[in-house]
Image (tube, one colour):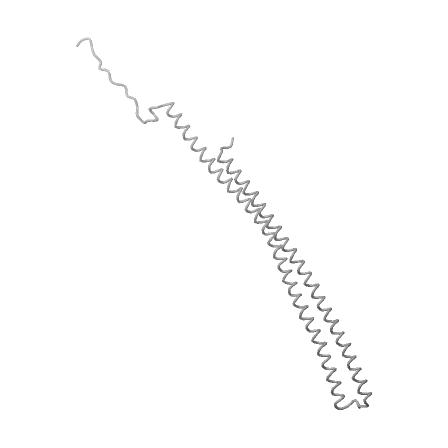
Length: 203
C-alpha cells in the first residue's frame, strides 16, 4: 500500500498537470481567436483597398468626362463668337485641358495612396495572425512540457521519500533483531563468570 506522502505527491502532480494542460488549451484558443480576427481584418483592409482604387478610377473618369464637356463648350463659345483658335483663345483652352488632366491624375494618385495604406494594414494584420498562430502552438507545447515536469518532479520526490522510509525501517528492524538475539553483543560488554576458589580436604 502506498504511503500517504506518495499519495499526496501523486495527487498534487495530477492536479498540476491537468491545470497546466487546461491553461495551455485556453491560451491556445485565445491566440487562435486573435489570429482569426487579424485574418478577418486583413481581408477587410484588402477589400477596402480595392474599393478605394475603384472609387478613384470612377472619380478620375468623371473628371475627364466633365473636362471634355467643358472644353467642348469652350470651343462652341469661341466658334460662335467668330474667334479663331489661336492666340489667347488657344492658350485658355490648353490651360483648361492641362488643369483638368492634373485634377484627374491627382484623383488617381490619392486613390493609389489610400489603397497602398490599406494594403500595408492588411499585411500587418496577416503578420499578426501568423504570429498568433505560432503562439497558439507554443502555448500548447509549453502546457504539455509543464505537465510532464510536474509528473516527473512528483515521481522523483516520491522515490526519494520512499527510499528514505525504507532505509529507516530497515535500520530499526536490524537493531531490534540484534538486541533480541544477543544483548551482550549489542552493548559490546561481555558477561564474565566469577572465579570460584578450590578448597582441598587437607587444609
